Image (spheres, rainbow, N blue to C red):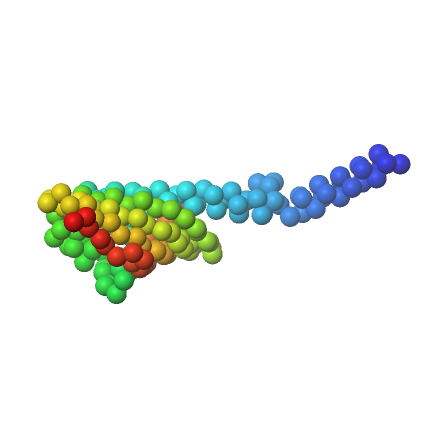
Length: 165
């Protein structure tokens, strides 16, 4: 009797699993989780590559992951993609800086995702002085085909730039 109940329970579970599954045969909730993991990794890779491009002042690679409507808002300074590139070029390659991301959290709604993170930046100017600042950032991404493009970028200073004396 136990064996029959176990078989019926197992059959019912499999029936419910199949009824809730997508075309790949796995439950939709698992598909979403797998897609979100893959998409989260793609978003982080896009973001990290974009920062490297900005550090190297590689105009083509700075613009590549941005939507035509891109807008960056750093504290209260709004910048289009063209204004961002001009600002980076004006600063030149004299300052070397790095960005270290932590506490990344990405949420998805269809082909739109938004990521919040903490960003610790360090910079060393041609005078050799080390400076650092901390930001809380929110980035809005839009899926274009298989890529995630940056549409909006907001950075708020949490700890202002401070330099060694």
